[in-house]
Length: 286
Image (cartoon, rainbow, N blue to C red; front, top):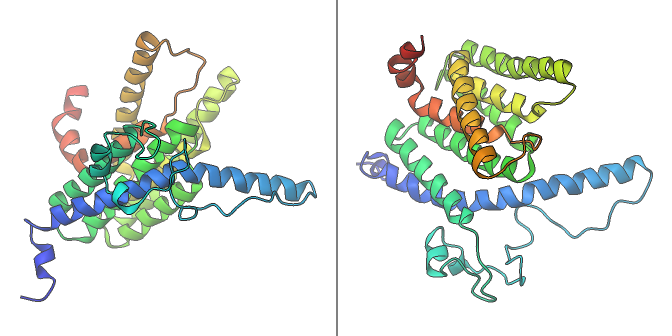
């Protein structure tokens, strides 16, 4: 047996993918926290340049530098405190230095990254489709966290996601290339049309341009045939969550609710179970 054939075994690969996904999930926490701040710093630098002013003197800040630290006391996170999920449990959800609470969101994102990767490894086996599904799910998790925090869907994620979908479908990994190209176009234009129709009718913006790009990326990955299901699922979940927030959390009607998380969730559902849903459930709506 060749040296690495053991990695492709159905009883092994999903567990390797799970462990990898947990580690990537830890990095996704960094992305969700830092990327919006990196974008803000870039905006400030561009504004200063346009105004003919010197660039703000800010310390180096990216996805790697500086090291992760407690936002309350500045304690640097060591390697043993950065083990996905297990460190949070061992620390009982508190900083080891000052005892400040560490949000439940951190282990949940790590767990989501791990479970998504593990399921992709089990569903698609040792294949390019499994790797693609992992990348899609990890991107969806990062975009969800960022949109919930800032109501932004950064081009730094949505545009590479779109091109990655088209590249993978050069060989028809998830959809024929023609369907992927049409899916990217139709995904963007469908929400763009709804945006302008709503704006012309009400004078208000119902969604952001990031939503257009995210649906275009989903179309590039899954093909245009998946778009009706994705739009239906995201709209239903978004409506239910919005009503629940207004009823139980006293969420004001004028307060915007990000749509990106529902698109991302619908895209993941369509990626894994789209054909089965269309086959078994869509006839009920018809």
